[in-house]
Length: 115
Image (cartoon, rainbow, N blue to C red; front, side, top):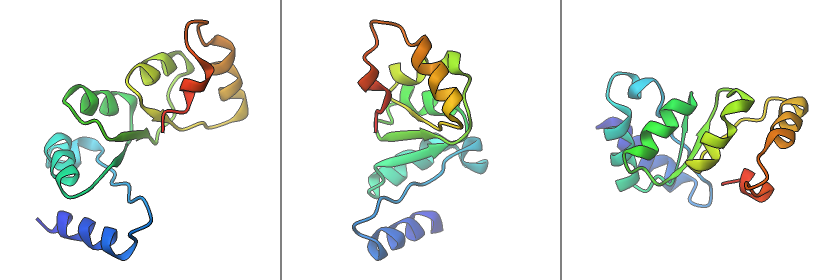
């Protein structure tokens, strides 16, 4: 598949950089999970998705690579992201302040940076 050749080409052109494939919207009809698995076989170590649900779905199906949610999640969902080791986009200082204020005591503040 052309996608995997392109990924390998980017990795070869930029060997010291992290290439982050975006596998959102069900891989644009190709299936996010099979695309992510094949990309991992080709050296991918980090993926971006649009939503927290997409990231959790990948994680629940054995994708252990680093995951980043590009869309903004509700602050109430931060524990789900932490539980599944998923990095999230921080849209503003006020969003981050709310997350930190409402983080349960049993959750270590340092675990907020999973990547």
